[in-house]
Image 1 (cartoon, rainbow, N blue to C red):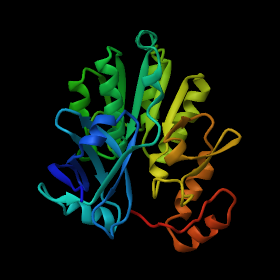
Image 2 (spheres, one colour):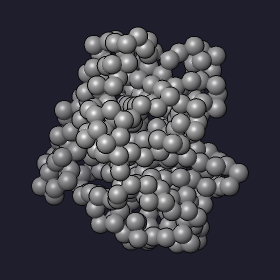
Image 3 (cartoon, rainbow, N blue to C red):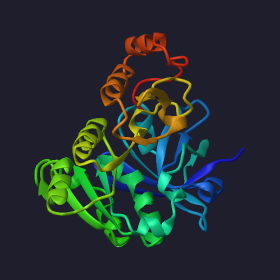
Length: 294
């Protein structure tokens, strides 16, 4: 049986861990914006995690996760030399810009907004773009200095990085939307905003950019549960269409996403009663094949 060895583990912040995992096939095929599904053992829960980085030469894939429930508590207990039973991927659609003309991309000004652990899926996108010669800005938001992750790694790529924290312990005090607004009002003519982080953050980033008429892409990886579309937890309305974040996304047009519906479903899915109610709604495949916080 194929097993997937943990070759590096780093505690990035309180309850936030980075792991490098030997998964050559995934590393060879991975693209920015995609994710993997991890199972710690045969009876373990399926945990979707966005890919933070990948190294084809070493055959490793980097994941970052936050301890939220029993499964991630158990995962945090794994050490270098331990193995995952399953490490399936890459899954989901890659970021749209990898299909765009590079020379045209170089003429655009992009800014990534990373909220909390959202810095992890932002990193491979920034890395890919910088490697293609596309200069990007990055805004990282966190509760406090202790929770700012991957700031130095982003800077090492050559990106212009702005940090904002709720308490002002690092960078500017305030919200990521405050920083974005000040940059745009100050003359930054962004062509594209890519926001990844908590649902509420992405909602208000999209609301702000709509006023400026700036193209905005968001990632709905926070609402994924089983990663196959079968549980229906990640059903979302995008424009006039029903989409499933794990199979149709995770990236969508932020100006078309019904955030209020997505946030409501995310909240409901945390309880058994809520999962049963969602199962009865049109668009849920089964409801209840998995549940609770990872």
